[in-house]
Length: 427
Image (cartoon, rainbow, N blue to C red; front, top):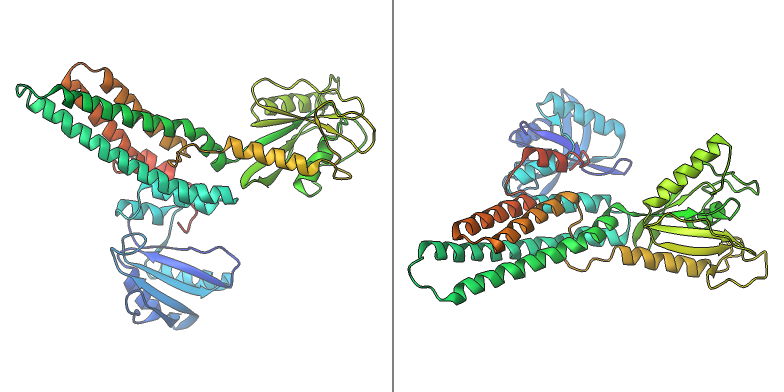
């Protein structure tokens, strides 16, 4: 993380591109292009020149260390949004001694300089990647709840460690038994709180990653028509010929703020056609790991194909507009006329909301976070069964170490690489 770096921090194609510089030479390099810097955190219009050529006229804002995004000297240049402008200014900055930033390098510097802990960095990445309102809330509210919870957990653990040290340092002082009982109660309460957060983690992870609902059924059951209707566009080819769909075809939809991939599959039947047989195999494999199976069968004599065990199943009878029949207690829909489609969308949205509903405000939405908290819980569980005071104190220290890893207070290079490498260039 050496040198002065730069990168655009706005998306491509807009009328304005904001380019950020960060590093010890940020002010010097900017001065070489723009002349005198404006007052701190004030914006001024400046011509950018290099080697006698005017590159652009930009709004220049300077942010001295340590009160900047990265904790280093930073400058933001608001350029005109053309590609040629960005290319010319980038070339001039490189010639002046800066270099293009690596993915996540701004945020990693912010973490290294104490401006951003790992939880905040991950929440920011999730906010940038959010596709739906529920994902945005998870990134903002869930991250804030997790940060508050971690701070409270740490405070409780520090108090427990202090109590334990008192028991070790004054073994002959005949401390009342209430001290030991209070310490045990404190740890049991802390452990229960953390375990509740772990129990809610799978729902938060599913919301962050998105769900997959697989449409499964026999040939000509209306699966592709149903996919197109739910997606609101022609995704899959629809044909009366059985076996038209042979591969997995999907569309991303927003259900109650939850991103859901709807996947159409090959019709389930015995076949000697090797390509269709592979499609059937892929259909059953994908259905086995789906969050929900939408099992479809066509009227007037619906026969549902067997669904893999494990995932919940919603049974739907299709082509309700073609026949007069009793729906056998299942939801009957017609993608052609729209009959039952509003009810189906409502049921799918309710299912998506149930699967991603978190029971605690501390939203552990990443495997790294879950792994850290599991290590904390394991250490606390050991402490409750420890008969020796020194061993219990060591378990507390192990729990504190694991909790510090959660926020990045203890830096592990491999973890930092994994977290920040997934960021976009401008972060």
